[in-house]
Image (cartoon, rainbow, N blue to C red; front, top):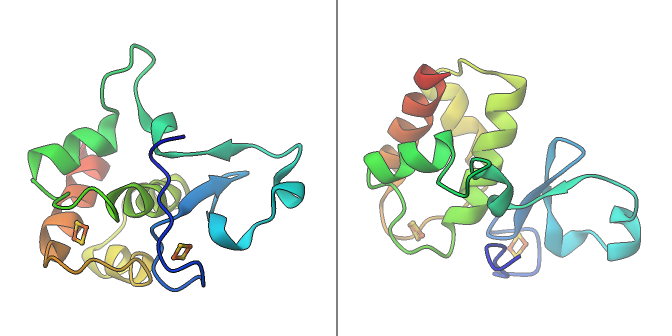
Length: 122
Ligand code: FES
Ligand code: FES
């Protein structure tokens, strides 16, 4: 699980976001005992079966949306959770869903474009 990042440890940054039973969750706030027996997906789980980047990862690469690599895994998982419950999100819905995932480098518009691109690819 090299992809999961530890940032604030206080549910403030989103760097640690994973999916638990299909919902985005801040891993820093979930004790291992609470995850026992549940389905936990990290950013590694977004890859294709052959190990190549998955749809959302390809879109982030195409839009050059991941600058630092530290916040990106959490953003990807938050975006994946959004796409699973809303396969065709609007720009505003993407911004709302990712609002709690901090990015300091100014990639926000690229990130939104990447999620839109992934949604279009279906
Ligand atoms: S490490 Fe920042 S929200 Fe978990
Ligand atoms: S991509 Fe990590 S701070 Fe912006």
